[in-house]
Length: 221
Ligand SMILES: NC(=O)c1ccc[n+]([C@@H]2O[C@H](COP(=O)([O-])OP(=O)(O)OC[C@H]3O[C@@H](n4cnc5c(N)ncnc54)[C@H](OP(=O)(O)O)[C@@H]3O)[C@@H](O)[C@H]2O)c1
Image 1 (cartoon, rainbow, N blue to C red):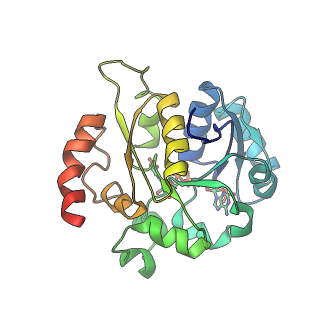
Image 2 (image 1 turned 135 degrees about the vertical axis):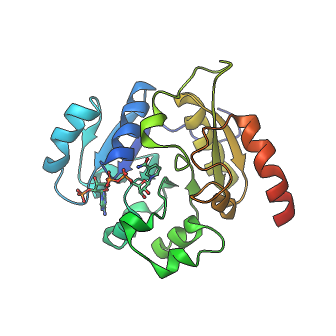
Image 3 (image 1 turned 45 degrees about the vertical axis):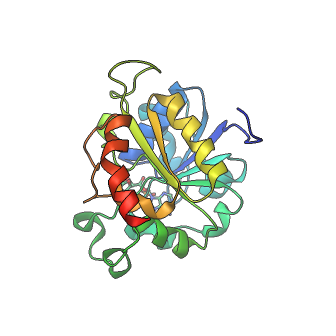
């Protein structure tokens, strides 16, 4: 790694559901130290981790984030108010979440999120910065779609964020787990990769992402 960006080693995932456990398995396999936390006692997550993400450690969310280089938010958006934002201070934080009304119900703030739901998540949590990624792929595709660097079938993963160092750190993680990362240098471009956005659920290559998003980003500039 160059440019003074510390490499990510320890990843804490908040949310031990479908996305959280798929990410945990993937990250453990790629050599990261992974902790998983639910909304409460880690006892509730220990069994889940043991069966669905061996190698990942269950901890209280506060402990899991205290020494993490990267925190991934993988909880339903309607549960966001249950998250203590102080545990995210000074961390690189990834938003892997989507606003999904059948699950989340109608939430006015996210319904009206002109600049994408991650801008709202950032503001609700009072974070200085946030990175959006992992959200445009289905949890069931995340692992089987991984390919080594240079593989002709390697897919792409968009990474949107305002802070260039955070984006670069997350890009490295995305590349290492098995995707060609495409950096989008504004968090508000996260709206292009959320549900209803151009590449959501499309299993695109990196070239597909660039080709599809470039005109939309140029129009927004
Ligand atoms: N399903 C997909 O394919 C997919 C793909 C991309 C993105 N997403 C998005 O990813 C997010 C998670 O989806 P999912 O399908 O994985 O949900 P899920 O299976 O319902 O799991 C949600 C998890 O979040 C935990 N949680 C709730 N509040 C929490 C808190 N304050 N701190 C830590 N953990 C908390 C729950 O734990 P408790 O039991 O302790 O409440 C549960 O383990 C959603 O925003 C979804 O839209 C989903």
